[in-house]
Image 1 (cartoon, rainbow, N blue to C red):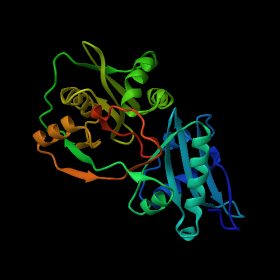
Image 2: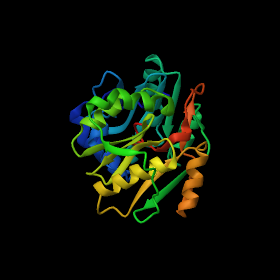
Image 3: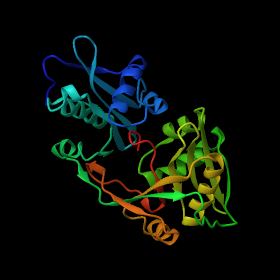
Length: 287
Protein backbone atom coordinates (compact mmCIF):
# COMPACT_ATOMS: atom_id res chain seq x y z
CA UNK A 1 0.00 0.00 0.00
CA UNK A 2 1.27 3.48 -0.88
CA UNK A 3 1.37 6.43 1.47
CA UNK A 4 -1.36 9.08 1.45
CA UNK A 5 -0.49 11.95 -0.90
CA UNK A 6 0.15 14.37 1.98
CA UNK A 7 2.93 12.20 3.40
CA UNK A 8 6.35 11.07 2.22
CA UNK A 9 8.79 8.40 3.33
CA UNK A 10 12.48 9.00 4.08
CA UNK A 11 15.37 7.54 6.05
CA UNK A 12 15.47 8.63 9.67
CA UNK A 13 18.43 10.65 10.96
CA UNK A 14 19.77 11.18 14.46
CA UNK A 15 17.96 14.52 14.38
CA UNK A 16 14.69 12.56 14.38
CA UNK A 17 15.50 10.87 17.71
CA UNK A 18 13.39 13.23 19.88
CA UNK A 19 10.35 12.85 17.63
CA UNK A 20 10.72 9.06 17.41
CA UNK A 21 11.15 8.93 21.18
CA UNK A 22 7.92 10.89 21.51
CA UNK A 23 6.09 8.38 19.32
CA UNK A 24 7.42 5.52 21.43
CA UNK A 25 6.31 7.22 24.63
CA UNK A 26 2.86 7.88 23.14
CA UNK A 27 2.24 4.12 22.99
CA UNK A 28 3.77 3.39 26.39
CA UNK A 29 7.21 2.25 25.24
CA UNK A 30 10.51 3.39 26.71
CA UNK A 31 12.71 5.71 24.69
CA UNK A 32 15.69 3.30 24.37
CA UNK A 33 17.99 5.84 22.76
CA UNK A 34 20.78 3.27 22.36
CA UNK A 35 18.47 0.90 20.47
CA UNK A 36 17.31 3.62 18.11
CA UNK A 37 20.92 4.53 17.35
CA UNK A 38 21.49 0.89 16.41
CA UNK A 39 19.11 1.21 13.43
CA UNK A 40 19.60 4.82 12.31
CA UNK A 41 22.32 5.51 9.75
CA UNK A 42 23.83 2.04 10.05
CA UNK A 43 24.99 -0.11 7.14
CA UNK A 44 23.24 -3.18 8.60
CA UNK A 45 19.89 -1.52 9.33
CA UNK A 46 17.32 0.94 8.07
CA UNK A 47 14.89 3.17 9.93
CA UNK A 48 12.15 4.91 7.94
CA UNK A 49 9.88 7.78 8.93
CA UNK A 50 6.72 9.04 7.28
CA UNK A 51 6.49 12.83 7.45
CA UNK A 52 3.99 15.49 6.41
CA UNK A 53 4.76 18.68 4.51
CA UNK A 54 5.91 20.42 7.69
CA UNK A 55 8.30 17.57 8.53
CA UNK A 56 6.19 16.28 11.42
CA UNK A 57 6.50 12.54 11.94
CA UNK A 58 3.40 10.52 11.12
CA UNK A 59 4.98 7.11 11.59
CA UNK A 60 8.19 5.13 11.97
CA UNK A 61 9.50 1.61 11.43
CA UNK A 62 12.88 -0.09 11.34
CA UNK A 63 14.63 -3.27 10.31
CA UNK A 64 17.99 -4.77 11.24
CA UNK A 65 19.92 -7.45 9.37
CA UNK A 66 21.21 -10.49 11.26
CA UNK A 67 22.45 -12.52 8.31
CA UNK A 68 19.52 -14.61 7.00
CA UNK A 69 17.26 -13.28 9.75
CA UNK A 70 15.83 -9.78 9.55
CA UNK A 71 14.11 -8.23 12.55
CA UNK A 72 11.44 -5.52 12.29
CA UNK A 73 10.67 -3.08 15.08
CA UNK A 74 9.72 0.45 16.12
CA UNK A 75 6.48 0.16 14.14
CA UNK A 76 4.40 3.12 15.34
CA UNK A 77 1.89 5.40 13.59
CA UNK A 78 0.84 8.68 15.16
CA UNK A 79 -2.79 8.58 16.30
CA UNK A 80 -3.91 11.28 13.84
CA UNK A 81 -2.66 9.20 10.89
CA UNK A 82 -3.89 5.73 11.82
CA UNK A 83 -6.08 3.71 9.45
CA UNK A 84 -4.64 5.59 6.47
CA UNK A 85 -2.26 2.89 5.27
CA UNK A 86 0.80 4.50 6.84
CA UNK A 87 1.84 1.43 8.82
CA UNK A 88 1.37 -0.82 5.81
CA UNK A 89 3.55 1.40 3.62
CA UNK A 90 6.33 1.56 6.20
CA UNK A 91 6.21 -2.19 6.87
CA UNK A 92 6.34 -2.95 3.16
CA UNK A 93 9.36 -0.70 2.65
CA UNK A 94 11.23 -2.10 5.65
CA UNK A 95 10.53 -5.69 4.58
CA UNK A 96 11.70 -4.89 1.05
CA UNK A 97 14.97 -3.51 2.44
CA UNK A 98 15.58 -6.59 4.60
CA UNK A 99 14.85 -9.04 1.81
CA UNK A 100 17.08 -7.03 -0.54
CA UNK A 101 19.85 -7.36 2.06
CA UNK A 102 19.58 -11.16 1.89
CA UNK A 103 17.20 -11.89 4.77
CA UNK A 104 15.10 -14.94 3.93
CA UNK A 105 13.29 -14.94 7.27
CA UNK A 106 11.62 -11.88 8.83
CA UNK A 107 10.47 -11.75 12.45
CA UNK A 108 8.95 -9.19 14.80
CA UNK A 109 7.22 -8.79 18.14
CA UNK A 110 3.59 -7.80 17.65
CA UNK A 111 1.17 -5.94 19.88
CA UNK A 112 -2.46 -6.98 19.75
CA UNK A 113 -3.26 -3.80 17.80
CA UNK A 114 -0.52 -4.45 15.27
CA UNK A 115 -1.23 -8.14 14.66
CA UNK A 116 -3.89 -7.66 11.93
CA UNK A 117 -1.47 -5.48 9.92
CA UNK A 118 1.28 -8.07 10.12
CA UNK A 119 -1.08 -10.90 9.22
CA UNK A 120 -2.10 -9.00 6.07
CA UNK A 121 1.59 -8.90 5.15
CA UNK A 122 1.99 -12.66 5.56
CA UNK A 123 3.34 -12.86 9.12
CA UNK A 124 2.16 -15.71 11.31
CA UNK A 125 2.46 -16.42 15.04
CA UNK A 126 5.38 -18.62 16.08
CA UNK A 127 3.29 -20.11 18.88
CA UNK A 128 2.74 -19.45 22.55
CA UNK A 129 5.79 -18.61 24.61
CA UNK A 130 6.03 -17.89 28.33
CA UNK A 131 6.72 -14.65 30.16
CA UNK A 132 7.60 -14.57 33.85
CA UNK A 133 9.03 -12.23 36.46
CA UNK A 134 11.67 -13.79 38.69
CA UNK A 135 11.59 -12.27 42.21
CA UNK A 136 14.81 -11.31 43.93
CA UNK A 137 14.17 -13.84 46.70
CA UNK A 138 13.65 -16.77 44.32
CA UNK A 139 15.63 -19.97 45.00
CA UNK A 140 18.32 -19.41 42.38
CA UNK A 141 20.34 -22.58 42.88
CA UNK A 142 23.48 -22.47 40.77
CA UNK A 143 26.10 -24.85 39.43
CA UNK A 144 29.45 -24.44 41.26
CA UNK A 145 31.23 -25.25 38.00
CA UNK A 146 29.80 -22.09 36.39
CA UNK A 147 31.57 -18.76 36.86
CA UNK A 148 30.07 -15.39 35.86
CA UNK A 149 32.18 -12.36 35.00
CA UNK A 150 31.89 -9.09 33.12
CA UNK A 151 32.45 -9.48 29.36
CA UNK A 152 34.72 -7.24 27.31
CA UNK A 153 35.38 -6.67 23.62
CA UNK A 154 37.88 -9.54 23.78
CA UNK A 155 34.92 -11.88 24.39
CA UNK A 156 32.90 -10.79 21.34
CA UNK A 157 33.95 -13.67 19.09
CA UNK A 158 33.00 -16.24 21.74
CA UNK A 159 29.74 -14.45 22.56
CA UNK A 160 28.72 -14.24 18.90
CA UNK A 161 29.62 -17.88 18.27
CA UNK A 162 27.49 -18.96 21.22
CA UNK A 163 24.57 -16.70 20.31
CA UNK A 164 24.36 -17.41 16.57
CA UNK A 165 22.97 -20.98 16.51
CA UNK A 166 20.57 -20.21 19.36
CA UNK A 167 19.09 -16.93 18.12
CA UNK A 168 19.15 -18.01 14.49
CA UNK A 169 21.04 -15.00 13.14
CA UNK A 170 24.36 -13.24 13.55
CA UNK A 171 23.90 -10.60 16.29
CA UNK A 172 27.57 -9.68 16.64
CA UNK A 173 26.79 -6.07 15.71
CA UNK A 174 24.25 -5.91 18.53
CA UNK A 175 26.51 -7.68 21.03
CA UNK A 176 29.31 -5.23 20.25
CA UNK A 177 26.94 -2.34 20.91
CA UNK A 178 25.82 -3.88 24.20
CA UNK A 179 29.40 -4.38 25.38
CA UNK A 180 30.40 -0.81 24.48
CA UNK A 181 27.36 1.22 25.59
CA UNK A 182 27.63 3.14 28.90
CA UNK A 183 25.03 2.12 31.45
CA UNK A 184 25.14 -1.51 30.32
CA UNK A 185 27.05 -4.48 31.66
CA UNK A 186 27.30 -7.74 29.75
CA UNK A 187 27.71 -10.74 32.04
CA UNK A 188 29.37 -13.86 30.64
CA UNK A 189 28.81 -17.30 32.18
CA UNK A 190 31.52 -19.88 31.62
CA UNK A 191 31.64 -23.58 32.44
CA UNK A 192 34.03 -26.44 31.76
CA UNK A 193 33.10 -26.36 28.06
CA UNK A 194 33.47 -22.61 27.59
CA UNK A 195 30.61 -20.10 27.21
CA UNK A 196 27.47 -21.37 28.94
CA UNK A 197 25.35 -18.23 28.75
CA UNK A 198 25.28 -14.46 28.96
CA UNK A 199 23.05 -11.48 29.57
CA UNK A 200 23.12 -7.73 29.19
CA UNK A 201 22.19 -5.81 32.33
CA UNK A 202 20.89 -2.29 31.71
CA UNK A 203 21.51 -0.40 34.90
CA UNK A 204 19.95 2.76 33.45
CA UNK A 205 16.66 0.96 32.69
CA UNK A 206 16.74 -1.69 35.46
CA UNK A 207 16.21 -4.60 33.10
CA UNK A 208 18.07 -7.41 31.37
CA UNK A 209 18.16 -8.80 27.86
CA UNK A 210 19.13 -10.45 25.72
CA UNK A 211 19.78 -13.45 27.95
CA UNK A 212 20.77 -16.97 26.98
CA UNK A 213 21.60 -19.82 29.33
CA UNK A 214 22.59 -23.38 28.56
CA UNK A 215 20.54 -24.77 31.48
CA UNK A 216 18.51 -23.48 34.45
CA UNK A 217 21.49 -23.50 36.88
CA UNK A 218 23.36 -21.25 34.44
CA UNK A 219 20.35 -18.94 34.18
CA UNK A 220 20.22 -18.82 37.97
CA UNK A 221 23.91 -17.88 38.19
CA UNK A 222 23.51 -15.07 35.68
CA UNK A 223 20.35 -13.79 37.37
CA UNK A 224 22.06 -13.68 40.75
CA UNK A 225 24.80 -11.47 39.32
CA UNK A 226 22.22 -9.30 37.55
CA UNK A 227 20.33 -8.75 40.81
CA UNK A 228 23.62 -7.72 42.42
CA UNK A 229 24.04 -5.02 39.76
CA UNK A 230 20.43 -3.87 40.21
CA UNK A 231 20.05 -3.71 44.02
CA UNK A 232 16.73 -1.85 43.98
CA UNK A 233 14.93 -4.08 41.44
CA UNK A 234 12.34 -6.46 42.99
CA UNK A 235 12.18 -8.80 40.00
CA UNK A 236 13.51 -9.45 36.50
CA UNK A 237 11.54 -10.48 33.45
CA UNK A 238 12.31 -13.54 31.31
CA UNK A 239 10.77 -14.67 28.02
CA UNK A 240 10.83 -18.33 26.99
CA UNK A 241 10.01 -19.62 23.50
CA UNK A 242 7.63 -22.59 23.12
CA UNK A 243 10.39 -25.19 22.80
CA UNK A 244 12.26 -24.31 25.99
CA UNK A 245 10.65 -27.05 28.06
CA UNK A 246 13.51 -27.19 30.57
CA UNK A 247 13.12 -23.49 31.20
CA UNK A 248 9.36 -23.81 31.63
CA UNK A 249 9.81 -26.64 34.13
CA UNK A 250 12.33 -24.52 36.03
CA UNK A 251 9.92 -21.59 36.25
CA UNK A 252 7.24 -23.94 37.54
CA UNK A 253 9.67 -25.26 40.14
CA UNK A 254 10.41 -21.68 41.25
CA UNK A 255 6.68 -21.15 41.75
CA UNK A 256 6.59 -17.93 39.73
CA UNK A 257 3.57 -16.73 37.81
CA UNK A 258 3.96 -17.63 34.13
CA UNK A 259 1.92 -15.78 31.51
CA UNK A 260 1.44 -17.04 27.93
CA UNK A 261 2.43 -14.71 25.09
CA UNK A 262 2.06 -15.21 21.34
CA UNK A 263 3.36 -11.90 20.01
CA UNK A 264 6.39 -13.27 18.15
CA UNK A 265 5.56 -13.51 14.43
CA UNK A 266 7.52 -14.58 11.38
CA UNK A 267 7.42 -14.66 7.59
CA UNK A 268 9.45 -16.82 5.24
CA UNK A 269 11.05 -20.24 5.64
CA UNK A 270 12.09 -21.22 9.16
CA UNK A 271 15.80 -21.05 9.94
CA UNK A 272 17.81 -23.45 12.12
CA UNK A 273 18.00 -22.34 15.75
CA UNK A 274 18.38 -23.75 19.26
CA UNK A 275 15.66 -21.98 21.18
CA UNK A 276 15.90 -24.38 24.13
CA UNK A 277 18.58 -22.08 25.56
CA UNK A 278 16.88 -18.74 25.03
CA UNK A 279 15.61 -17.19 28.24
CA UNK A 280 15.26 -13.48 27.47
CA UNK A 281 14.89 -11.16 24.51
CA UNK A 282 16.61 -7.90 23.74
CA UNK A 283 14.62 -4.77 22.98
CA UNK A 284 11.46 -5.67 21.07
CA UNK A 285 12.79 -3.70 18.11
CA UNK A 286 16.06 -5.63 17.95
CA UNK A 287 15.09 -9.24 18.68
